[in-house]
Image (tube, rainbow, N blue to C red):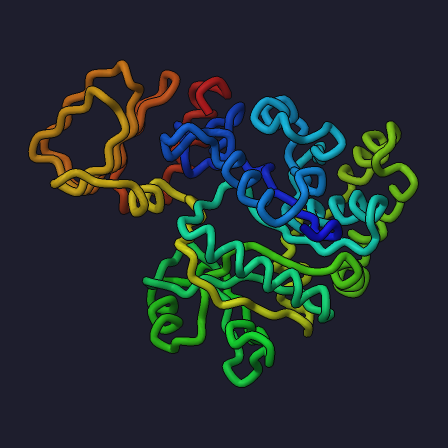
Length: 363
């Protein structure tokens, strides 16, 4: 295993669209959401131990979730948990991790991945990461992974690639033309029809030197802030300087801040059974279903004339459902949600309303 290979797992999100299973105190990445005994972050960590040494895997998360990470990933040291004092999106998260890793190994080759994705064909995934890491080791590239789309999903960002600019050593790696954030359905359909668009998986590979240059050129204000911490990273003085940095650091994504601007961006077109598990609908799509196309978790759920629903109930709760079609039915810790699947984009608003009317206890 290459000792220069490092992984940064981003695990700071709150997963509001998975409410009420995902809550502020226990977001979705820390939940066994597939019901197979492992949380999403545990699956992600285990996956990357096939590519990187365990001591080269870092987890970036909110300071609020330090104990959850330590509990669920006892294999990693406290030094491998990168604690953000506040949420500032993915660019500051990655900049912070870069400077931590630079103090350890300035020749690092890094893969950055979210903590809450599901991958069904892991052997294919491992092969793609291996090829990608070798490619960015040899080339000054910012490489991202694009998933060949199966439908015009409006919940994903899209990457358009240039079919005429393909990597000579691998015909699945292309230069990037454009990035588009979550398009309207009509536009997403056009993307699918064109054949040169991919879903943006939010997984990145680059050398530390390449991403450093990109921050210096495209996000100099963010880079200068984190540069102030040099000499303090991986020391007892890190927390104090990071608190000061995050007080003034802008909130910006790596896509908007760098990937959409840089000229050396490449995309690896792939298909390895991927889902970002962003919504109840995406979970419904990958769960097994009964003869009426209901995806049910819960040992005491009875359905009558009920079809196309996703149901998630505590194991000791007896639930009778009659006459429902295309619904989300979820109960967790004092909250019951019954919502049409087609309206799941409203869940964020429900969370806000519950917080205003009933307090933080239920969000």
